[in-house]
Length: 253
Length: 79
Image (tube, rainbow over all chains, first blue to last red; front, side, top):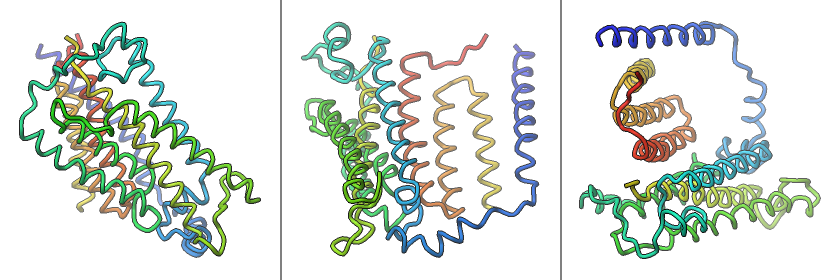
Protein backbone atom coordinates (compact mmCIF):
# COMPACT_ATOMS: atom_id res chain seq x y z
CA UNK A 1 0.00 0.00 0.00
CA UNK A 2 2.90 2.33 0.82
CA UNK A 3 4.62 1.55 -2.48
CA UNK A 4 1.31 2.04 -4.24
CA UNK A 5 1.07 5.56 -3.01
CA UNK A 6 4.67 6.30 -3.91
CA UNK A 7 4.07 5.02 -7.43
CA UNK A 8 1.01 7.19 -7.74
CA UNK A 9 2.87 10.32 -6.62
CA UNK A 10 5.75 9.47 -8.95
CA UNK A 11 3.36 9.15 -11.89
CA UNK A 12 1.79 12.50 -11.13
CA UNK A 13 5.23 14.12 -10.90
CA UNK A 14 6.29 12.62 -14.23
CA UNK A 15 3.09 13.84 -15.87
CA UNK A 16 3.62 17.35 -14.52
CA UNK A 17 7.21 17.37 -15.75
CA UNK A 18 6.06 16.28 -19.22
CA UNK A 19 3.40 18.99 -19.34
CA UNK A 20 5.95 21.58 -18.21
CA UNK A 21 8.36 20.45 -20.92
CA UNK A 22 5.64 20.82 -23.56
CA UNK A 23 4.48 24.21 -22.29
CA UNK A 24 7.89 25.73 -21.58
CA UNK A 25 8.65 26.90 -25.18
CA UNK A 26 5.41 28.86 -25.21
CA UNK A 27 6.35 30.80 -22.09
CA UNK A 28 10.01 31.21 -22.97
CA UNK A 29 9.60 32.38 -26.56
CA UNK A 30 10.15 36.02 -27.33
CA UNK A 31 8.17 36.12 -30.58
CA UNK A 32 5.98 39.22 -30.72
CA UNK A 33 2.26 38.59 -30.86
CA UNK A 34 0.62 39.16 -34.25
CA UNK A 35 -1.00 42.57 -34.25
CA UNK A 36 -2.49 43.15 -37.70
CA UNK A 37 -5.96 41.83 -36.96
CA UNK A 38 -5.98 43.50 -33.56
CA UNK A 39 -5.11 46.89 -34.99
CA UNK A 40 -7.68 46.54 -37.75
CA UNK A 41 -10.41 45.63 -35.24
CA UNK A 42 -9.51 48.50 -33.01
CA UNK A 43 -9.75 50.89 -35.95
CA UNK A 44 -12.76 49.62 -37.87
CA UNK A 45 -14.60 47.09 -35.68
CA UNK A 46 -17.26 49.38 -34.28
CA UNK A 47 -17.94 51.04 -37.60
CA UNK A 48 -18.18 47.69 -39.40
CA UNK A 49 -20.51 45.87 -37.04
CA UNK A 50 -22.07 48.51 -34.78
CA UNK A 51 -21.21 46.53 -31.65
CA UNK A 52 -19.22 48.32 -28.97
CA UNK A 53 -18.23 45.02 -27.38
CA UNK A 54 -15.68 43.89 -29.97
CA UNK A 55 -15.87 40.26 -28.90
CA UNK A 56 -19.45 40.00 -30.08
CA UNK A 57 -18.52 42.05 -33.14
CA UNK A 58 -16.13 39.22 -34.01
CA UNK A 59 -18.26 36.22 -33.23
CA UNK A 60 -21.51 37.47 -34.68
CA UNK A 61 -20.21 39.94 -37.25
CA UNK A 62 -16.96 38.80 -38.81
CA UNK A 63 -17.08 35.15 -37.81
CA UNK A 64 -20.80 34.45 -37.68
CA UNK A 65 -20.41 31.29 -39.72
CA UNK A 66 -18.21 29.78 -37.00
CA UNK A 67 -20.85 30.65 -34.44
CA UNK A 68 -23.48 28.85 -36.51
CA UNK A 69 -21.22 25.80 -36.56
CA UNK A 70 -20.70 25.96 -32.81
CA UNK A 71 -24.42 26.12 -32.26
CA UNK A 72 -24.95 23.04 -34.40
CA UNK A 73 -22.19 21.21 -32.51
CA UNK A 74 -23.89 22.09 -29.23
CA UNK A 75 -27.23 20.85 -30.54
CA UNK A 76 -25.69 17.56 -31.65
CA UNK A 77 -23.89 17.19 -28.31
CA UNK A 78 -27.02 17.74 -26.23
CA UNK A 79 -29.26 15.51 -28.33
CA UNK A 80 -26.59 12.81 -28.52
CA UNK A 81 -26.10 12.87 -24.75
CA UNK A 82 -29.79 12.62 -24.07
CA UNK A 83 -30.39 9.86 -26.59
CA UNK A 84 -27.48 7.76 -25.33
CA UNK A 85 -28.49 8.28 -21.70
CA UNK A 86 -32.14 7.51 -22.24
CA UNK A 87 -31.21 4.16 -23.78
CA UNK A 88 -28.59 3.23 -21.21
CA UNK A 89 -31.03 2.86 -18.33
CA UNK A 90 -29.32 5.57 -16.30
CA UNK A 91 -31.46 7.76 -14.12
CA UNK A 92 -33.10 10.71 -15.84
CA UNK A 93 -35.84 12.99 -14.67
CA UNK A 94 -39.30 11.75 -15.62
CA UNK A 95 -40.36 12.90 -19.05
CA UNK A 96 -36.86 13.68 -20.27
CA UNK A 97 -35.96 10.42 -21.95
CA UNK A 98 -37.64 9.23 -25.10
CA UNK A 99 -41.32 8.53 -24.70
CA UNK A 100 -41.17 4.81 -25.37
CA UNK A 101 -38.36 4.27 -22.89
CA UNK A 102 -40.26 6.28 -20.31
CA UNK A 103 -43.25 4.01 -20.46
CA UNK A 104 -41.11 0.91 -20.46
CA UNK A 105 -38.59 1.37 -17.73
CA UNK A 106 -38.09 4.29 -15.48
CA UNK A 107 -41.04 6.59 -15.30
CA UNK A 108 -44.36 6.09 -13.68
CA UNK A 109 -46.57 9.11 -14.21
CA UNK A 110 -47.81 9.51 -10.65
CA UNK A 111 -44.49 8.72 -9.12
CA UNK A 112 -43.30 11.26 -6.58
CA UNK A 113 -39.63 12.15 -6.87
CA UNK A 114 -37.68 10.34 -4.21
CA UNK A 115 -34.33 12.00 -4.75
CA UNK A 116 -34.69 14.91 -2.44
CA UNK A 117 -34.35 13.27 0.94
CA UNK A 118 -31.10 15.09 1.62
CA UNK A 119 -32.46 18.42 0.55
CA UNK A 120 -32.55 20.98 3.31
CA UNK A 121 -34.66 24.06 3.72
CA UNK A 122 -31.55 26.16 3.25
CA UNK A 123 -30.92 24.87 -0.27
CA UNK A 124 -34.60 25.05 -1.13
CA UNK A 125 -35.02 28.66 -0.01
CA UNK A 126 -31.72 29.98 -1.33
CA UNK A 127 -31.93 28.40 -4.77
CA UNK A 128 -35.62 29.14 -5.12
CA UNK A 129 -35.12 32.82 -4.36
CA UNK A 130 -31.89 33.12 -6.28
CA UNK A 131 -33.17 31.43 -9.44
CA UNK A 132 -35.19 34.35 -10.84
CA UNK A 133 -32.31 36.74 -10.15
CA UNK A 134 -29.91 34.50 -12.05
CA UNK A 135 -32.44 34.25 -14.89
CA UNK A 136 -32.68 38.03 -15.03
CA UNK A 137 -28.90 38.34 -15.12
CA UNK A 138 -28.81 35.80 -17.94
CA UNK A 139 -31.31 37.79 -19.96
CA UNK A 140 -29.28 40.93 -19.31
CA UNK A 141 -26.13 39.25 -20.61
CA UNK A 142 -28.04 37.99 -23.64
CA UNK A 143 -29.74 41.26 -24.55
CA UNK A 144 -26.81 43.58 -23.94
CA UNK A 145 -24.11 41.40 -25.46
CA UNK A 146 -23.31 44.03 -28.07
CA UNK A 147 -22.58 46.68 -25.44
CA UNK A 148 -21.13 44.95 -22.39
CA UNK A 149 -19.31 41.65 -21.92
CA UNK A 150 -21.62 38.76 -22.53
CA UNK A 151 -23.62 37.54 -25.46
CA UNK A 152 -25.72 34.64 -26.63
CA UNK A 153 -23.60 31.77 -25.35
CA UNK A 154 -22.74 33.31 -22.01
CA UNK A 155 -26.28 34.52 -21.41
CA UNK A 156 -27.65 31.15 -22.47
CA UNK A 157 -25.49 29.24 -20.03
CA UNK A 158 -26.41 31.63 -17.20
CA UNK A 159 -30.08 31.18 -18.11
CA UNK A 160 -29.55 27.42 -17.93
CA UNK A 161 -28.07 27.85 -14.44
CA UNK A 162 -31.13 29.87 -13.46
CA UNK A 163 -33.44 27.16 -14.76
CA UNK A 164 -31.50 24.55 -12.78
CA UNK A 165 -31.75 26.73 -9.66
CA UNK A 166 -35.48 27.02 -10.09
CA UNK A 167 -35.76 23.28 -10.65
CA UNK A 168 -33.80 22.55 -7.47
CA UNK A 169 -35.60 25.17 -5.44
CA UNK A 170 -39.18 24.51 -6.40
CA UNK A 171 -41.12 22.58 -3.82
CA UNK A 172 -42.10 19.03 -4.43
CA UNK A 173 -45.56 19.54 -5.83
CA UNK A 174 -45.11 22.98 -7.31
CA UNK A 175 -43.50 23.18 -10.71
CA UNK A 176 -43.25 25.84 -13.34
CA UNK A 177 -43.56 25.33 -17.06
CA UNK A 178 -40.00 26.52 -17.37
CA UNK A 179 -38.59 23.30 -15.96
CA UNK A 180 -40.77 20.96 -17.99
CA UNK A 181 -39.20 18.88 -20.72
CA UNK A 182 -41.77 19.75 -23.35
CA UNK A 183 -41.42 23.51 -22.86
CA UNK A 184 -37.62 23.42 -23.03
CA UNK A 185 -37.86 21.20 -26.07
CA UNK A 186 -40.12 23.64 -27.84
CA UNK A 187 -37.97 26.65 -26.98
CA UNK A 188 -34.87 24.91 -28.29
CA UNK A 189 -36.52 23.85 -31.56
CA UNK A 190 -37.99 27.32 -32.06
CA UNK A 191 -34.60 28.88 -31.31
CA UNK A 192 -32.88 26.74 -33.91
CA UNK A 193 -35.57 27.47 -36.50
CA UNK A 194 -35.24 31.20 -35.84
CA UNK A 195 -31.46 30.98 -36.00
CA UNK A 196 -31.64 29.27 -39.40
CA UNK A 197 -34.13 31.81 -40.72
CA UNK A 198 -32.02 34.67 -39.40
CA UNK A 199 -28.96 33.16 -41.04
CA UNK A 200 -30.74 32.81 -44.39
CA UNK A 201 -32.56 36.14 -44.23
CA UNK A 202 -29.46 37.92 -45.46
CA UNK A 203 -29.82 36.10 -48.78
CA UNK A 204 -33.12 37.81 -49.52
CA UNK A 205 -31.63 41.19 -48.69
CA UNK A 206 -28.84 40.59 -51.16
CA UNK A 207 -26.13 40.29 -48.48
CA UNK A 208 -25.39 36.55 -48.58
CA UNK A 209 -25.72 33.93 -45.86
CA UNK A 210 -25.45 35.55 -42.42
CA UNK A 211 -25.17 38.97 -44.02
CA UNK A 212 -26.82 41.75 -42.12
CA UNK A 213 -30.33 42.33 -43.54
CA UNK A 214 -31.17 44.99 -40.96
CA UNK A 215 -28.34 47.26 -42.02
CA UNK A 216 -30.34 50.29 -43.10
CA UNK A 217 -31.62 53.62 -41.94
CA UNK A 218 -34.45 52.04 -39.95
CA UNK A 219 -32.32 50.02 -37.49
CA UNK A 220 -28.79 50.42 -36.31
CA UNK A 221 -26.15 48.02 -37.51
CA UNK A 222 -26.17 46.25 -34.15
CA UNK A 223 -29.81 45.16 -34.54
CA UNK A 224 -28.84 41.96 -36.33
CA UNK A 225 -26.33 41.14 -33.60
CA UNK A 226 -29.03 41.64 -30.96
CA UNK A 227 -31.39 39.29 -32.84
CA UNK A 228 -28.71 36.62 -33.19
CA UNK A 229 -27.75 36.99 -29.51
CA UNK A 230 -31.36 36.50 -28.38
CA UNK A 231 -31.90 33.47 -30.61
CA UNK A 232 -28.60 31.81 -29.65
CA UNK A 233 -29.20 32.58 -25.99
CA UNK A 234 -32.63 30.95 -25.97
CA UNK A 235 -31.31 27.92 -27.81
CA UNK A 236 -28.23 27.40 -25.65
CA UNK A 237 -30.14 28.09 -22.44
CA UNK A 238 -32.95 25.66 -23.15
CA UNK A 239 -30.58 22.99 -24.49
CA UNK A 240 -28.18 23.00 -21.56
CA UNK A 241 -31.02 23.48 -19.09
CA UNK A 242 -32.75 20.46 -20.59
CA UNK A 243 -29.63 18.34 -20.17
CA UNK A 244 -28.98 19.45 -16.59
CA UNK A 245 -32.56 18.99 -15.42
CA UNK A 246 -32.71 15.59 -17.07
CA UNK A 247 -29.65 14.63 -15.04
CA UNK A 248 -30.97 16.12 -11.81
CA UNK A 249 -33.79 13.61 -11.98
CA UNK A 250 -33.90 10.60 -9.80
CA UNK A 251 -31.67 8.17 -8.05
CA UNK A 252 -31.10 4.69 -9.37
CA UNK A 253 -32.39 2.49 -6.60
CA UNK B 1 2.23 38.47 -9.16
CA UNK B 2 -1.46 37.82 -8.58
CA UNK B 3 -1.51 35.84 -11.82
CA UNK B 4 1.34 33.61 -10.69
CA UNK B 5 -0.35 33.03 -7.33
CA UNK B 6 -3.62 32.05 -9.02
CA UNK B 7 -1.84 29.76 -11.47
CA UNK B 8 0.03 28.05 -8.63
CA UNK B 9 -3.24 27.51 -6.75
CA UNK B 10 -4.79 26.06 -9.90
CA UNK B 11 -1.92 23.61 -10.27
CA UNK B 12 -2.19 22.59 -6.62
CA UNK B 13 -5.92 22.01 -6.93
CA UNK B 14 -5.46 20.07 -10.15
CA UNK B 15 -2.96 17.74 -8.51
CA UNK B 16 -5.30 17.32 -5.56
CA UNK B 17 -8.18 16.42 -7.84
CA UNK B 18 -6.01 13.82 -9.54
CA UNK B 19 -4.70 12.34 -6.32
CA UNK B 20 -7.86 12.35 -4.24
CA UNK B 21 -9.48 9.00 -3.62
CA UNK B 22 -12.88 10.53 -2.99
CA UNK B 23 -14.10 11.59 -6.40
CA UNK B 24 -16.62 14.04 -4.98
CA UNK B 25 -13.69 16.00 -3.53
CA UNK B 26 -12.08 15.91 -6.97
CA UNK B 27 -15.22 17.37 -8.54
CA UNK B 28 -15.35 20.18 -6.00
CA UNK B 29 -11.66 20.85 -6.60
CA UNK B 30 -12.36 21.11 -10.35
CA UNK B 31 -15.14 23.54 -9.60
CA UNK B 32 -12.74 25.61 -7.50
CA UNK B 33 -10.26 25.56 -10.40
CA UNK B 34 -12.97 27.08 -12.59
CA UNK B 35 -13.59 29.76 -10.00
CA UNK B 36 -9.89 30.64 -9.84
CA UNK B 37 -9.65 30.69 -13.64
CA UNK B 38 -12.59 33.08 -13.66
CA UNK B 39 -10.62 35.45 -11.44
CA UNK B 40 -7.59 34.94 -13.65
CA UNK B 41 -9.49 35.78 -16.84
CA UNK B 42 -10.96 38.82 -15.19
CA UNK B 43 -7.54 40.05 -14.12
CA UNK B 44 -6.29 39.46 -17.67
CA UNK B 45 -9.14 41.68 -18.92
CA UNK B 46 -11.20 39.02 -20.69
CA UNK B 47 -14.60 39.43 -18.98
CA UNK B 48 -16.46 37.50 -21.70
CA UNK B 49 -14.34 34.42 -21.13
CA UNK B 50 -14.65 34.91 -17.37
CA UNK B 51 -18.45 34.80 -17.55
CA UNK B 52 -18.35 31.66 -19.68
CA UNK B 53 -15.87 29.97 -17.40
CA UNK B 54 -17.90 30.78 -14.29
CA UNK B 55 -21.18 29.54 -15.75
CA UNK B 56 -19.89 26.47 -17.56
CA UNK B 57 -17.04 25.41 -15.31
CA UNK B 58 -18.48 26.07 -11.90
CA UNK B 59 -22.12 25.40 -12.80
CA UNK B 60 -22.92 23.04 -15.61
CA UNK B 61 -19.94 20.68 -15.54
CA UNK B 62 -20.30 20.27 -11.77
CA UNK B 63 -23.91 19.21 -12.22
CA UNK B 64 -22.88 16.71 -14.90
CA UNK B 65 -19.97 15.32 -12.86
CA UNK B 66 -22.07 14.94 -9.73
CA UNK B 67 -24.73 13.18 -11.76
CA UNK B 68 -22.12 10.81 -13.19
CA UNK B 69 -20.80 10.11 -9.69
CA UNK B 70 -24.29 9.40 -8.42
CA UNK B 71 -24.77 6.83 -11.15
CA UNK B 72 -21.40 5.17 -10.59
CA UNK B 73 -19.15 4.94 -7.55
CA UNK B 74 -18.04 7.75 -5.33
CA UNK B 75 -14.75 6.18 -4.35
CA UNK B 76 -11.90 5.71 -6.74
CA UNK B 77 -10.65 2.12 -6.80
CA UNK B 78 -8.02 1.74 -9.45
CA UNK B 79 -6.44 -1.56 -8.51
